[in-house]
Length: 388
Ligand SMILES: [Zn+2]
Ligand SMILES: [Zn+2]
Image (spheres, protein in one colour):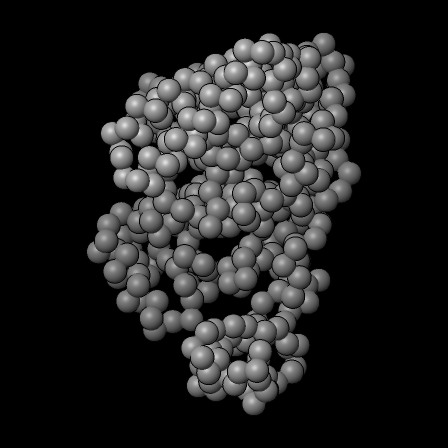
């Protein structure tokens, strides 16, 4: 088994010679649910974790709405609630200078409450959540990764709840030497109550495939290039963003398929970081599937027609019908007639849940991106999560 991205209908490097030098190779991971061992590369599968090494836990303050129990704690929480109301009232009244003063006090109070919560709920499960395996790559499968000297396994775990500032799971990256692991330890099970179910990946085998990518629309070198691409697209059935440039889905290296604005982080020493890994909610979208859905998956997918149209009152809506069905533009929707000249059709995969995959939900159908500094020997990382 394996997965094959179809050949591109257009060679971007030929059509836009100024972009030829910006081509990068990404490793699409094509996660597919299945049994996998700690001695294999995977997404969401068991890690080659030394039995003698403590399983990682996240001790960052997790959301916890229970009131504090001490007298001091209750006093602080009352004051916080009063201040919160006051700040809102002042903001509504446009008293911005006054808001600033109280806002600072509010932030100090919240910090004091967090501090106290750590003492009062020190034994509470929320204070220390087991992290969960997200990815493991052996150098033999993904040699493109910047393995530090003496390591041949890259492991990613995350804390399966939302964390600031990106409001997604909080990842950590470990590099290790597989030869140094003699006894493999079992993972600590995630907390069943406090872990967000949508952040618990289903174990998947990976089927690495190298494909060439071009920069995301917003990573293009200039407005002039974007303008040229936009003019070119008008005459064609292919979209640069959806079909020709950056691979959607879970992948290692290459360009980033940003959902929002590009955010290329720097390490503390000022080096620009590289894209390490994208963990995606979906492997393709309703439009991008046309060039990015693997041929093998296409064979087992049922397609439908998505019909979009305006109604007599100007609102737009859509309906799904079978591939061999004709859309009946004379029928009414919510009692309103269809404007026949507005009807457009396109073919989309009928099942958008993408069964068999990681079964994650990053934010609202988003992606989580990990970055790594390839220059610093300890390989510092950064994280960003985006959704529409
Ligand atoms: Zn955490
Ligand atoms: Zn660095």
